[in-house]
Length: 449
Image (cartoon, rainbow, N blue to C red; front, side, top):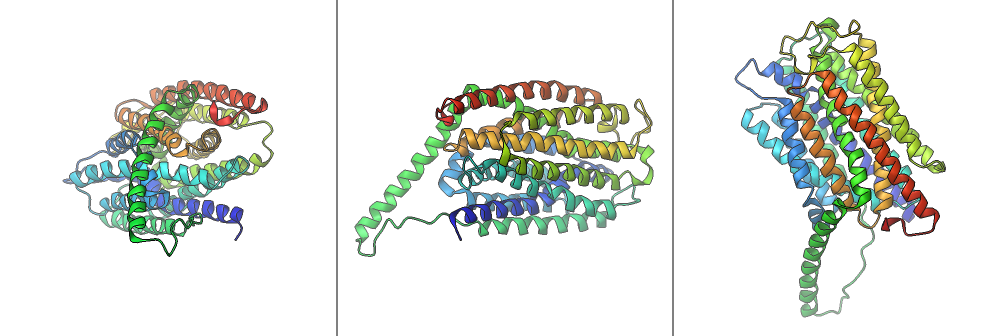
């Protein structure tokens, strides 16, 4: 297998492994608050929003140290270990207790930080400036196809149900745990670059001991260097500007992955289909994500217009979705009690409009994330782990804040926050892309900006 074929193989395995893991995790996140509402009538008392706020809060703090972890352990083993913690979190829902639910939320926050830093590192070392756009698109399409499979099951299994029974819950989460473990094992299929033969057969044991000591020192040096680079990257002009865009992706991630499905499941005017519509919503978010990732991966081969048109498309699509949601969804839907809400917004709640908005949310999200992955991999090709750690730090802390306020804010206020950050994030992305293009045109080193 040629070096280029091996790199493409690694990207495909990376995407498929994430597809399995996030088929489980994103389906879990999509239905968590609905399942917990059904559980709150028993001895269990908790909040899916609070759990997600803990996850993303720990996630953001952990990103400061994850480049050091990935530098020492390597991306492959880092992703495998993280996958085990993802599976543990999903398994908690089989028989949930408040202490295990919130403890697992802390652990998965740490695991997520390691996972995504390692993913960014793996994506970058298997790409170059000509293939980073294509590979980002391939990975994103495979990752987001996870929204399709799990939610398809939810749609058919929960059709006609207004309450989630214990057997329904256990069946779903046992299956999701197994799926997550399959994805975790797939990381071992990623092929490492050919190792250099440093030691000969005729070297003495003293030489080998010296090499081990030097290797240990080298690992510690790499860990410290990765941490320092993360701190330095945080205050660069380009990263500060991209952080506004990243902050927006954190807010809208919270909305489409946790809040929007809960809103749909709370609207009594949707009748007996309200719970199964959560699954259908997730499917159409996934279709939007897959379409966007595939399309922009192909377009990156002829990328003379740069990344800005894709980001512009993303914000326009999201603004349309936000306006339709504002018209279609009652304001109290995100914080409705277990009985749901009978309120109306400016139009009679429409299932068709709700599902169309799911598609728009997914399409817009893929516009932003594929271009952020692409520009980070291109700007910081030699500092990929620290760069992706900073990216995930900002995204996750904003997601944590959004999950926290989702417990209290009415829908229209949540939409307004996203509109403001979406506009500012788009302008800041444009600024970085224009500066980067100008430096490339002058023949300077792109990574030095």
